[in-house]
Length: 231
Image 1: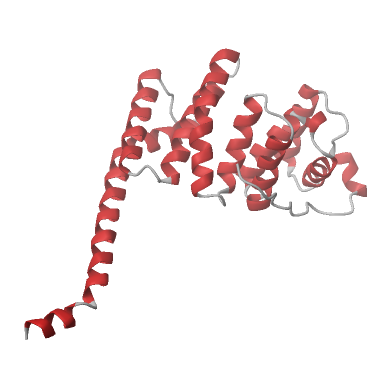
Image 2 (image 1 turned 90 degrees about the vertical axis):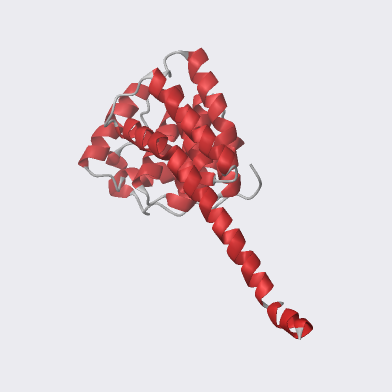
Protein backbone atom coordinates (compact mmCIF):
# COMPACT_ATOMS: atom_id res chain seq x y z
CA UNK A 1 0.00 0.00 0.00
CA UNK A 2 2.76 2.42 0.98
CA UNK A 3 4.70 1.56 -2.17
CA UNK A 4 1.68 2.30 -4.33
CA UNK A 5 1.21 5.66 -2.66
CA UNK A 6 4.87 6.53 -3.23
CA UNK A 7 4.64 5.55 -6.89
CA UNK A 8 1.48 7.62 -7.30
CA UNK A 9 3.26 10.58 -5.71
CA UNK A 10 6.34 10.43 -7.96
CA UNK A 11 4.83 12.35 -10.93
CA UNK A 12 4.02 15.22 -8.59
CA UNK A 13 7.62 15.68 -7.42
CA UNK A 14 8.88 17.58 -10.52
CA UNK A 15 5.91 19.93 -10.36
CA UNK A 16 6.50 20.53 -6.68
CA UNK A 17 10.17 21.25 -7.31
CA UNK A 18 9.28 23.73 -10.04
CA UNK A 19 6.74 25.41 -7.77
CA UNK A 20 9.34 25.77 -5.01
CA UNK A 21 11.87 27.22 -7.47
CA UNK A 22 9.35 29.69 -8.89
CA UNK A 23 8.35 30.80 -5.40
CA UNK A 24 11.97 31.27 -4.37
CA UNK A 25 12.88 33.14 -7.55
CA UNK A 26 9.83 35.39 -7.26
CA UNK A 27 10.70 36.18 -3.66
CA UNK A 28 14.23 37.19 -4.67
CA UNK A 29 12.94 39.40 -7.48
CA UNK A 30 10.49 41.13 -5.15
CA UNK A 31 13.22 41.73 -2.57
CA UNK A 32 15.55 43.15 -5.23
CA UNK A 33 12.78 45.32 -6.64
CA UNK A 34 12.00 46.78 -3.23
CA UNK A 35 15.70 47.34 -2.43
CA UNK A 36 16.28 49.23 -5.70
CA UNK A 37 12.95 51.04 -6.06
CA UNK A 38 14.04 54.38 -4.61
CA UNK A 39 17.31 54.38 -6.55
CA UNK A 40 15.61 53.59 -9.85
CA UNK A 41 13.00 56.28 -9.29
CA UNK A 42 15.61 58.92 -8.50
CA UNK A 43 17.85 57.99 -11.43
CA UNK A 44 14.93 58.11 -13.86
CA UNK A 45 14.05 61.60 -12.61
CA UNK A 46 17.67 62.78 -12.80
CA UNK A 47 17.98 61.51 -16.35
CA UNK A 48 14.75 63.23 -17.33
CA UNK A 49 15.81 66.50 -15.69
CA UNK A 50 12.84 66.39 -13.32
CA UNK A 51 14.91 66.40 -10.15
CA UNK A 52 18.28 67.79 -9.09
CA UNK A 53 20.81 65.27 -7.89
CA UNK A 54 23.33 65.54 -5.07
CA UNK A 55 26.42 63.48 -4.29
CA UNK A 56 24.89 61.98 -1.09
CA UNK A 57 21.77 60.98 -3.03
CA UNK A 58 23.90 59.49 -5.80
CA UNK A 59 25.86 57.45 -3.25
CA UNK A 60 22.60 56.33 -1.65
CA UNK A 61 21.26 55.27 -5.06
CA UNK A 62 24.43 53.30 -5.73
CA UNK A 63 24.14 51.55 -2.38
CA UNK A 64 20.52 50.64 -3.08
CA UNK A 65 21.29 49.22 -6.52
CA UNK A 66 24.33 47.31 -5.27
CA UNK A 67 22.27 45.82 -2.43
CA UNK A 68 19.61 44.72 -4.90
CA UNK A 69 22.24 43.26 -7.23
CA UNK A 70 23.58 41.10 -4.42
CA UNK A 71 20.11 39.56 -4.16
CA UNK A 72 19.75 38.93 -7.92
CA UNK A 73 23.24 39.21 -9.48
CA UNK A 74 22.04 37.94 -12.88
CA UNK A 75 19.38 40.65 -13.17
CA UNK A 76 20.06 42.53 -16.46
CA UNK A 77 17.86 45.48 -15.48
CA UNK A 78 19.86 46.12 -12.30
CA UNK A 79 23.14 45.73 -14.18
CA UNK A 80 21.86 48.27 -16.69
CA UNK A 81 20.74 50.69 -13.96
CA UNK A 82 24.13 50.57 -12.26
CA UNK A 83 25.86 51.18 -15.58
CA UNK A 84 23.53 54.07 -16.25
CA UNK A 85 24.12 55.49 -12.77
CA UNK A 86 27.87 55.61 -13.33
CA UNK A 87 27.47 56.91 -16.88
CA UNK A 88 25.16 59.65 -15.62
CA UNK A 89 27.81 60.76 -13.14
CA UNK A 90 30.42 60.61 -15.90
CA UNK A 91 28.31 62.77 -18.17
CA UNK A 92 27.78 65.31 -15.42
CA UNK A 93 31.59 65.47 -15.06
CA UNK A 94 32.22 65.48 -18.83
CA UNK A 95 34.25 68.71 -18.67
CA UNK A 96 36.66 67.15 -16.15
CA UNK A 97 38.47 64.44 -18.15
CA UNK A 98 39.80 62.51 -15.17
CA UNK A 99 36.39 62.22 -13.51
CA UNK A 100 34.58 61.59 -16.80
CA UNK A 101 36.84 58.68 -17.67
CA UNK A 102 36.75 57.27 -14.16
CA UNK A 103 32.96 57.10 -13.99
CA UNK A 104 32.50 55.83 -17.54
CA UNK A 105 35.15 53.20 -16.90
CA UNK A 106 33.14 52.08 -13.86
CA UNK A 107 30.00 51.96 -16.02
CA UNK A 108 31.40 49.61 -18.67
CA UNK A 109 31.46 46.30 -16.69
CA UNK A 110 27.81 46.71 -15.71
CA UNK A 111 26.80 47.65 -19.24
CA UNK A 112 28.64 44.68 -20.71
CA UNK A 113 27.10 42.31 -18.18
CA UNK A 114 23.65 43.69 -18.93
CA UNK A 115 24.18 43.18 -22.66
CA UNK A 116 25.48 39.65 -22.10
CA UNK A 117 22.31 38.82 -20.15
CA UNK A 118 19.93 40.73 -22.44
CA UNK A 119 21.63 41.22 -25.84
CA UNK A 120 18.54 42.49 -27.66
CA UNK A 121 18.11 45.67 -25.60
CA UNK A 122 18.57 48.49 -28.11
CA UNK A 123 18.72 51.26 -25.50
CA UNK A 124 21.45 49.42 -23.60
CA UNK A 125 23.52 49.15 -26.79
CA UNK A 126 23.05 52.87 -27.46
CA UNK A 127 24.13 53.75 -23.92
CA UNK A 128 27.12 51.44 -24.29
CA UNK A 129 28.09 53.25 -27.50
CA UNK A 130 27.91 56.56 -25.66
CA UNK A 131 30.18 55.24 -22.90
CA UNK A 132 32.70 54.03 -25.46
CA UNK A 133 32.69 57.44 -27.11
CA UNK A 134 33.19 59.19 -23.79
CA UNK A 135 36.19 56.93 -23.16
CA UNK A 136 37.67 57.88 -26.55
CA UNK A 137 37.11 54.39 -27.95
CA UNK A 138 36.87 54.45 -31.74
CA UNK A 139 36.94 51.96 -34.60
CA UNK A 140 35.32 48.54 -34.76
CA UNK A 141 34.22 48.37 -31.10
CA UNK A 142 32.28 51.64 -31.23
CA UNK A 143 30.95 50.90 -34.71
CA UNK A 144 29.59 47.53 -33.59
CA UNK A 145 27.74 49.12 -30.67
CA UNK A 146 26.22 51.74 -32.97
CA UNK A 147 25.18 49.20 -35.59
CA UNK A 148 23.62 46.85 -33.06
CA UNK A 149 21.69 49.66 -31.37
CA UNK A 150 20.31 50.79 -34.73
CA UNK A 151 19.55 47.26 -35.89
CA UNK A 152 17.50 46.59 -32.77
CA UNK A 153 15.89 49.99 -32.25
CA UNK A 154 16.44 52.45 -35.07
CA UNK A 155 12.78 53.46 -34.84
CA UNK A 156 13.02 54.16 -31.09
CA UNK A 157 13.50 57.91 -30.70
CA UNK A 158 15.79 57.65 -27.65
CA UNK A 159 18.02 55.09 -29.33
CA UNK A 160 18.21 57.10 -32.55
CA UNK A 161 19.09 60.32 -30.74
CA UNK A 162 21.82 58.74 -28.61
CA UNK A 163 23.44 57.00 -31.57
CA UNK A 164 23.10 60.09 -33.77
CA UNK A 165 24.83 62.20 -31.11
CA UNK A 166 27.72 59.72 -30.95
CA UNK A 167 27.96 59.57 -34.73
CA UNK A 168 28.02 63.34 -35.07
CA UNK A 169 30.71 63.68 -32.41
CA UNK A 170 32.87 61.13 -34.29
CA UNK A 171 31.72 62.05 -37.79
CA UNK A 172 35.08 62.01 -39.53
CA UNK A 173 35.77 58.43 -38.41
CA UNK A 174 32.33 57.03 -39.26
CA UNK A 175 32.20 54.53 -42.17
CA UNK A 176 30.45 55.56 -45.36
CA UNK A 177 27.33 53.43 -44.93
CA UNK A 178 26.65 54.84 -41.46
CA UNK A 179 27.17 58.37 -42.75
CA UNK A 180 24.67 57.56 -45.52
CA UNK A 181 22.22 56.26 -42.90
CA UNK A 182 22.65 59.46 -40.94
CA UNK A 183 21.98 61.58 -44.03
CA UNK A 184 18.83 59.58 -44.78
CA UNK A 185 17.67 60.00 -41.18
CA UNK A 186 18.10 63.78 -41.50
CA UNK A 187 15.49 63.70 -44.26
CA UNK A 188 12.99 62.25 -41.78
CA UNK A 189 13.58 64.81 -39.00
CA UNK A 190 10.94 67.29 -37.93
CA UNK A 191 11.61 71.01 -37.50
CA UNK A 192 12.85 70.63 -33.91
CA UNK A 193 15.17 67.81 -34.90
CA UNK A 194 16.59 69.81 -37.80
CA UNK A 195 17.16 72.84 -35.57
CA UNK A 196 19.02 70.67 -33.06
CA UNK A 197 21.04 69.09 -35.87
CA UNK A 198 21.99 72.50 -37.24
CA UNK A 199 23.34 73.56 -33.85
CA UNK A 200 25.38 70.37 -33.55
CA UNK A 201 26.85 70.50 -37.06
CA UNK A 202 27.74 74.17 -36.65
CA UNK A 203 29.46 73.44 -33.33
CA UNK A 204 31.31 70.40 -34.68
CA UNK A 205 32.21 71.92 -38.03
CA UNK A 206 30.37 69.29 -40.09
CA UNK A 207 29.56 70.67 -43.53
CA UNK A 208 28.59 67.56 -45.48
CA UNK A 209 25.41 66.73 -43.59
CA UNK A 210 22.33 68.82 -44.28
CA UNK A 211 18.63 68.70 -45.07
CA UNK A 212 19.50 70.40 -48.37
CA UNK A 213 20.51 67.01 -49.73
CA UNK A 214 17.07 65.55 -49.04
CA UNK A 215 15.63 66.67 -52.35
CA UNK A 216 17.96 64.23 -54.09
CA UNK A 217 17.83 61.48 -51.48
CA UNK A 218 16.73 58.24 -53.08
CA UNK A 219 16.01 56.13 -50.01
CA UNK A 220 14.75 56.27 -46.49
CA UNK A 221 16.84 55.03 -43.60
CA UNK A 222 17.70 51.41 -44.27
CA UNK A 223 17.85 48.70 -41.61
CA UNK A 224 21.35 48.12 -40.24
CA UNK A 225 22.70 44.58 -40.19
CA UNK A 226 23.46 43.26 -36.71
CA UNK A 227 27.20 42.42 -36.52
CA UNK A 228 28.15 38.97 -35.28
CA UNK A 229 30.55 38.27 -32.45
CA UNK A 230 30.72 38.59 -28.71
CA UNK A 231 31.29 41.69 -26.64
